Image 1 (tube, one colour):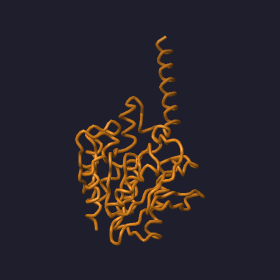
Image 2: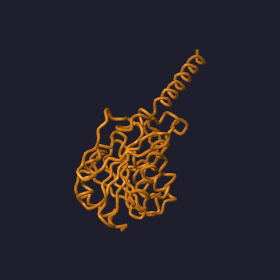
Image 3: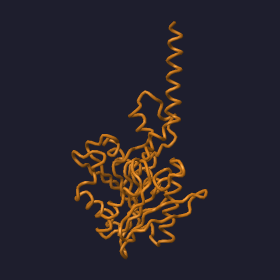
Length: 264
């Protein structure tokens, strides 16, 4: 009888592991419904030829002469159009802005999302920014929010920017999985690890980390941990702020603008 119970428990546990493994991308990438084109005066929606016949979509606001361009990677519950307000804020501050859509999201919904697919789209867009739009890496500030923090870190590792901003970042998706599903072997199940913690020690560029102390999605200690792993990082903790309201205060946006300008 005991053996039967143990076998039943093992089968149930393995079945749950398989179910999580097969459905994890619906958890990591909760794609918002519909597809909307971003609209902002002075901005251009670019359609770039991407990997394997795909199209990479990017929102581009040119920078005034000599000013840096902020390259933004959005969170997992957003799409490109949701960043138009942020583009406008940087535009008003006299900076350029460039945002990249993820495969599986919004206008790029034809292909499913994955870590490698997002990296490929981001690199395609960044190569276009540097080579066709004449924005050098020295005037490129990489910025990632939530899921996008992992994309920004990878693009920094590939040498695409001179400064790095991480807004509500995680150490890795494996770590997030271990927090949420502590009873599952996250390191064996995660298909898209986005392991920023492993990459951080090798990145010497200036890093600004912004995290709310009451973040209910990504624990604030993950942002603090990353601050100890990057060799040249500043951590700004926003008292009482949650996951989705860290950019609500004008002072926070002003700090992002100042940080971006410090590299020019």
